[in-house]
Amino acid sequence: MPGQDGIEAARDLAEAVPSVRAVVLTTFGRPGFLRRAMEVGAAGFLVKDSPVAELARAIRAVMAGERVIDRDLAAAALAQGATPLSAREADVLRAAADGATVADIAGRLFLSEGTVRNYLSSAIGKTGARTRVEAARVAEEKGWL
Image (tube, rainbow, N blue to C red; front, side, top):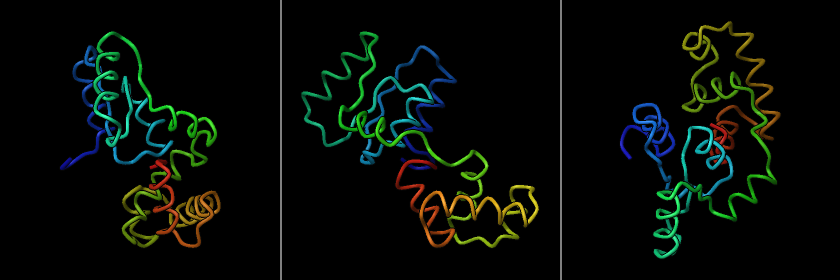
């Protein structure tokens, strides 16, 4: 989707038209994306390669007031738990994803360079990465960003 992803679209829909029940269909079958979709108010979350009959059943169930979540993703999300990143660590990683310097990140987020270094160090440790760009990639892949 140009300009935003399905989770952002579901959030925008929930804010603009609270009665809308959004189903997120994704190629990113990752627990973190599921958790984020539920947090913004999506009523369903399914992987795009689900069988057509399953997708149709899910849409009917959501229209009937139920929540529908891919079972495998739900189990993986419970096993993985919530993101280990704080909100500020996630902000700093997003800003670092394109290879920005510490000074650039500090300027964008109105933080001191030392604070940015601390957040990056913590996020790198939590993701098990070796660099800030790798940490951002890992966090994105896990659905934490």
